[in-house]
Image 1: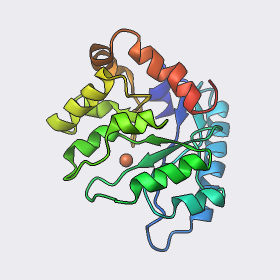
Image 2 (image 1 turned 60 degrees about the horizontal axis):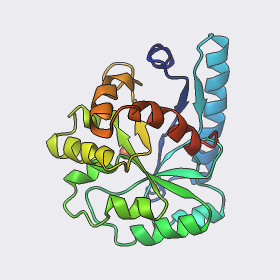
Image 3 (image 1 turned 90 degrees about the vertical axis):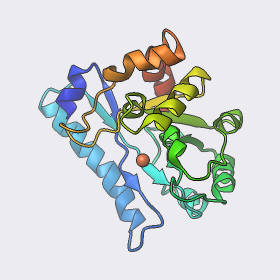
Length: 216
Ligand SMILES: [Fe+2]
């Protein structure tokens, strides 16, 4: 997968394994440790093999009422070295506490980046307005596959609208494996530029992403 990414022109990957505080029998301390140790091991391996890709720590943190407390215990994996965290809002149910939790995370110095916001297009209730989140200092991430129509028309439409309104701060490959979900971004370059205007792809994969991982 790293070789595929390298071929695509990707130099840095933020690894975002699921981090689900509400799952029962989950040892979050162990998972937190495993994420950081795993990324270190992987980078060592990539260097050994001469693959010019660096992997940064991160996680896709599921929305939970426990997040502020976990933040206080320093257990939320950040995206790279900064204070941005990738937060996934529930799609199937409306979490009434979500906005309060996001606010409490901001109070603690974190900048929530909402994971694949466009997928909320298929949510039964959509109470959170993306423009409000951004106005309050949060960021929005969109998946490439959504722009390519792989998650249906409504999702593609919302992704396009977010880009048009300038509400997107980062792109995700949603890479899971080398065949069905490879780590590629250039396949959605055209769709990104068409919706967001020229230079959008460059900005989202460059300066905007660098700022999120604390290298801006
Ligand atoms: Fe997700």
